[in-house]
Image (tube, rainbow, N blue to C red):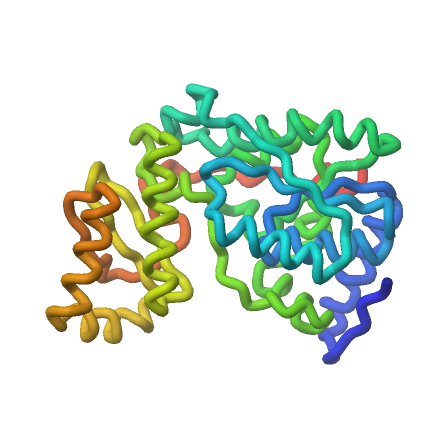
Length: 295
């Protein structure tokens, strides 16, 4: 298995690809913490290329993973041809997650890597790698600390690849999901301090699935108590306002959300902003790049 370039890359990006290949080859065998997002999918692709049957992709499954994203992860793994497993995770049983504190993501990743560690050990002492990229280091990402504590490598960040570069590289390598919208876990739809339950996660998943089926490919349904706040990309707001100004589409939307258990639904006029709920948090110090790759 070798992914040939379908388009030329700038020298710096070509160099990063060479370095990424080298890092994963040196780690063989590897277990990829694989969500099906564009980042972990690129890591899975290069891991397969460099490690062959020594590469195993594992997806953690819980109510925080939207059903359609679980299915997409399966399809993408099948397209690549990488060995793929799903494992159930139990972060909802941990009050450090379910109470939704600012460090919620730490509890989530701690649970995932607690489960991945023995699997990797049984797979000839495989190294665990994730899809953290260089941009992630500048955001509020407590999960990175949990990964560090378990010795997880982040090869994309280690070679300095940003999200945009991950997409550019994925496109050049012919990965058909290179422009797949970012889809953070469903727990990110709740303001810190609002309890997270399986029922609430499933409600959000169903609301977003309804909007996806209605033709909105990139969407977030944020929850504030029992109120749903829809976020769409800013360039789609005019279209959304025009559609939902009409009685029939608006009533269909409201009826669908009320049926799911929401008491009100609105449209965020700022548009979709990744990490919007992190605005009130104090800036977190950037994790060091050392330890992201080789250890």
